[in-house]
Amino acid sequence: MVSSKLGAAALLLLVSCSAWSQDAIPVRYRNTNPSVGYVGSTSCAGSICHEDICRNYSQQPMGRSMAPANLPSELEKVRSALPFSSPS
Image (cartoon, rainbow, N blue to C red):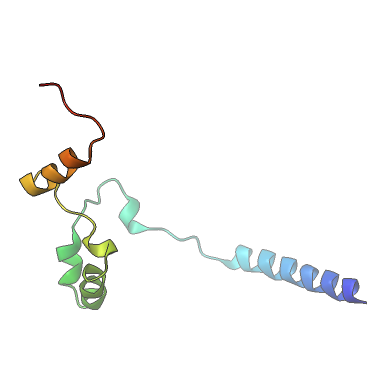
């Protein structure tokens, strides 16, 4: 009894998925075109629809995890973390 109900549920799921996939409109992402350039977070933060997301993300550790690697303070962190010393 249980196996027949499970089989019927699986068949119903399979039929509904195949019907859905035939009617689905293919998604076309506009930002994957080679002509699209990087705009940066300041561009998104200034927009009406992304302002809250950018503000909240920048307060999270993940949002503060990137920094320019060419600042002297950042380069010092890397030098002190190396497990070997450079030749003198």
